[in-house]
Image 1: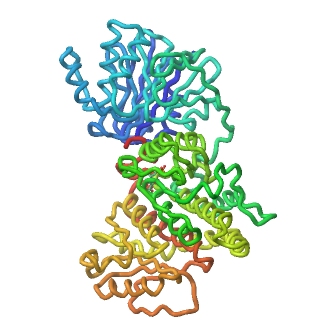
Image 2 (image 1 turned 45 degrees about the horizontal axis):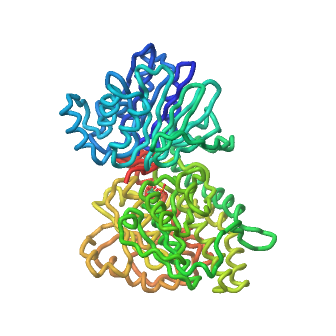
Image 3 (image 1 turned 30 degrees about the vertical axis):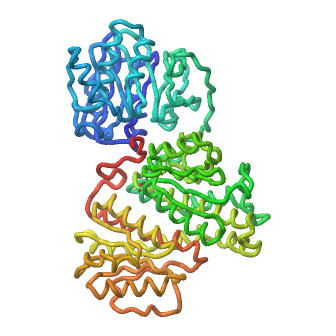
Length: 606
Ligand code: F6R
């Protein structure tokens, strides 16, 4: 993962680097560092922990350099520590790196034999020594080219040189990198968000490219060193909603703003006058598609599973779902009439990007469902369906999950209608139900008190289970993932019907189990499975929807009822109490809710 930034200017750059690093902290937050160059001397400040700590350290000294690089780290090689924090420097260069150098052990051996001394446990340090070695006999550009040729793996790099007073080299393979343009200064960053307060003029490097930034010029080169011309994109000036406001955590804010994000997304896609869904410029005819493959990681994978359910219910298409890290190494049978849908909030997830790249290389039809529309996944897909959620800062995905499900649902009903699998009446009834979704979600946000009391049992538990069938199974997986990542409580999402094939052995007296049983096609079956866990001592928190029918089960520990709506929309409502369960459990345990341990918002390493 990791985030990198570089600035070359006429003024001191350390405070702007710190500001950008704060924005990049979603990519990693176990350590941070900065290096600036002044009068031919590279000054480095690094520390374990957050950017705030780095800022405090820097405030104690004067960092006056007018060219500099900065880094936030998510450890891959070597523990999080000041020593392993980037930048890594030699007597002649300083480097920040996002990615993994897969052949670092071999390269290190080669460099040690040449007399280079290593200080850290990182893979990155080989880059420092390689350039230092090549600079002995080559000019800067050739040293960079030689160094890049030696590296296997993925990287975005920012490099400053002791003898180059206003120059930064950037390079990318696999990991994203953007260049920004300012008055008498230029920038390098892992994303445009980090540069947004300084510029809205951006160029994204393509894979294999490198660039040389000076304060008044930027040059781009391909992997052979040939100069390339690249266009400058002008991004919107909107700063977006990057403020917590009165909320204690971004996650709390992002849960609460879901009615608004749903409304925004619906406004983008639904033509209320004609009661229709707009998929403007969808590039393929319906007879060109006979199957859909949905691909994502983590929460995005769960929204793919949800979409499989809807597509299968509503259309005649063959649907499959894959985890990106599995798909990319599988022996896939690419079919020209398949549509490949990549789901990703950040649009930068390395495995999802690699899966997309593989499909593009095989000339497949590729479509992405993303939140960040300037991201690599969005840029490299043939068609993009944005989820219009606004920035999601909390590491645990909440509003983006609902946004992904919403867009995939809109897509499934539109495709179903276009293919004639549902008639106009059914299509328009479903659209009408969607128009009330935001209000229904808003009402469901009132489950706070009930959830807070349920939390105590989860917080003290050794483990927990989340059970559901049909459309409730992906939601069970998502509920369990949220509890794991935020409250560090072992939680397993399971298809309710599978319990008797093994996991029932885990159930013991007092174990909290969430049973998701909306009154849908699967209801009676799930209630039977619920009885089986209650009979073995589980404390069941049942989540269902309101009904006048009684629930035929005794000894349910707690029950949460969401509003009634079209069965297809119940997963949106049921997700809300599960998000809150994870949030309040983590709050009770005093954990860092927006930045859970060992994680990062954008997973740019495989
Ligand atoms: C969990 C979570 C992760 C992400 C996953 C994919 O709360 O946020 O599981 O869903 O890392 O990230 P994106 O959607 O950015 O590709």
